[in-house]
Length: 315
Image 1 (cartoon, rainbow, N blue to C red):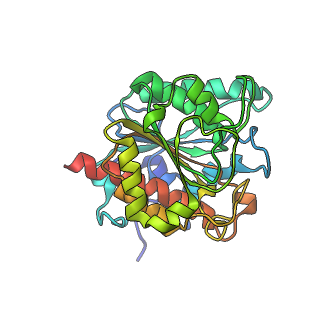
Image 2: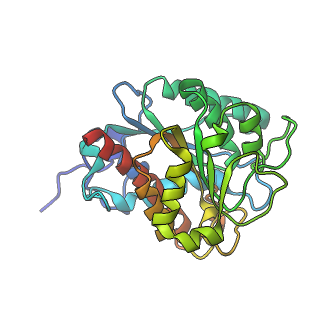
């Protein structure tokens, strides 16, 4: 018997509830959410920032948003772990497509990403951004700080991204330096998790290096994050290279000895009660990925954050 159920929930499906399409077919939006730029009444906007012109090593993160969307299709229509509920029975979420800018004018891209993020945030929705290299977090923080004030930055990363910058650089290794200088970050309540490289300055942020993470486990790491952030409004930036290359080979600057995906996801879930205002997951570089391992990890991080938002709204 023919199945009369249409596919392509991303194009014409309902805004609430999971989709039930084949995971290997149909339009590839994030978790099958409808593509829309009408954000009225929306709780969550997922969009991409396919920008990698600030990378210092292996390029290709511009393809990250597409890869993360493709990987997220595996979550289609199921109750999600660990909440065991469909978050879209509670949340109205859409895929807002990608930030648009002209590759022929690369220096204009940061301002365009910021302005489009600001426009999206005026709806009152949470913005989840799929990167893209880590430089995109700077214009995203500008947009979020304009709405919420300075934010506690919770940054999962192998690198501190605090190299010197006089304000003229386009580099994924200096976004924290610039954000601190511009007052976008609440430094006293900001923390970096999983660091295993050395930079000339910590810019005042607390650092939880990788050896401490392995020693503490998810309970201990989440306790340190809570102690640092407290009740401050917070922004999550997850550089996929926080994970060990065994779990995330597809990234521009891999560093051995990192977090397992299990430790990272458990830690994030235990931090669900923080006052989250937005997030990004960045540095997915599909040309260096294998079997979509890195894209799956990134999609799961964003999916886990969506579950956190759904559980908060349901309370």
